[in-house]
Amino acid sequence: MRAVVLAVVLAGCHLVERNEIVRPGEIERVTLRDRPTARSATLQLTEGGQLRFVEPLDCPTENVIQQTAGTEILTKPNLATFVVGIVATSLGAVSTIRGLSDDDPGGSPFLYAGAALIGAGLPFAVGPWIGNRTETVEGAPRPAVRTPSSTVPCGERTVVAKTATLRVRGLEIHGSIDGDGMFSISPFAIVDAYEAAASLPTWEVSAVLDGDRTKPVAAMIDGGSFASRSKGFLAAAAFDARVEPMRLVPGLSTGALRVGMMAAAGGTAVRIALPIKNDGPGPAWGVRGHLSAPAAPAIDGRILYIGSIAKGEGREASLMIPISPDVAGEIRNSVIDVSIELRDAHGTAPATPIRFRGPVIVDPTR
Image (tube, rainbow, N blue to C red; front, side):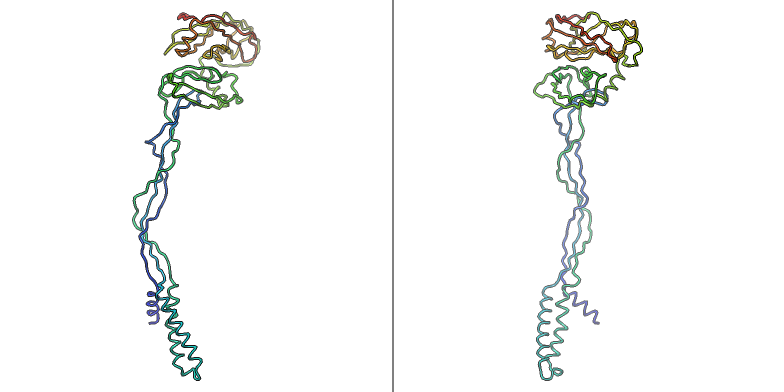
């Protein structure tokens, strides 16, 4: 019976409040790849040692926040019950003190009344502060909330263009661009693949696509990356790029250097031709020529790769250099100075440069 009374008293000491709540759950960041934004075009050096034009892409992202509904049940103190308990306990204490002060405390009605009030009021004063709690009852999932977030890199796409004219280290390189953005001229056209090293300076490249100067392309290419790519270039070269130990010294000699202009696939090219022979007694390895034409940036700095030349072998080494229509108009029939410094793998090539000075004549037979 006392337990039932206590339970009833405690039940009256509390208020129960129910609140519907929605709690956030897991957060997932989703990249919206169907809405890419292209940044300015740039130039890459591929693992195969080629130059490729691409447009880096940025995509927006969203934070997808899962939600779960529920009910929050708060059991709180009933302050009205607490006040009643405090008043009853206080009156009981006063009555008890009054009874104890009588001449015959044992027979004083104040003493018994005070004890009764204290016994009745104390549970009401203390009860509201016992058993308070917060419980959550899970409900059904709610639709996720999506909030926009920052953009992130999300790949790249090929630049749509047919031709490009690059400027790097004061030199000009003109060539075509295929459907994959690959540039037709290898960077090793001006970087000696036999001498590429990690100490090469960074390339600062600017380019014009299809002659449109309103949308210039700029890129920085780590000079150290040419060292690893040069091996692949030499392995796939159309000439014999082998370098073997020197056992007998070769004897390289050259004929007259010729420079002409001719039609080429997709436009016009300058053709450099150099007769070269190895009179022996040993083979020559890694032979190439460094071109110098300070007044013609579209020709200057090019590498004429020749490769190995056996004892007694003679051939005409040639190099086709594509040029833009503007450059073709400038140098056609004009007098230019071109020189070639020969180099080989073992430093046996003649030290005297081979020189050409004369007009660049259009001659399809050369």
